[in-house]
Image (cartoon, rainbow over all chains, first blue to last red; front, side, top):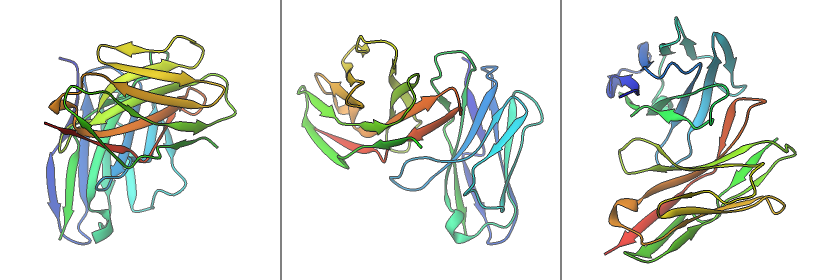
Length: 113
Length: 114
């Protein structure tokens, strides 16, 4: 089945130690999103890619970076994680000109110790 | 800027009963899409139902239906014959193809009582 895959599902990192989260999709969607979601809150958009065009939200900390080397893969790099970065990170996709519904991955739960 | 408001942080419904979750939004756009997403505890976010703003007919998906009032900027979700598996966080979301961004409401936690 076509889907959005996130690895790892659970990530523990130390304060200040760089970490990379990955997302892949088999849907061939041209738009990909990274969200941060804290407990019982709405997802907060960090970045999105329209093809290779990168769009950064104004309030996304500089500590967060992203890469999209090809249509299928997208990475979220957190250069120096702080305790406040502990959250669920969601990857999602949508297709230009389609029904515009988002397809979400299962998320990566990041713990910072 | 668009905003989405869900005024009910939590709702409860008896199994087999009907419940309505509220969502209002604000926009100056005329062409947009509205969605309800379901996020069960510790599980993936999935689409429940979608409404195109240019369509007057309310969307329906099995037990789920919406009441879309464009002039009032209201988009409520009705769940009929509620089941235990409907227990989840429900998010209302707004999308325009101009920005390719989704604006989410704060969510409503639905509890289903046996």
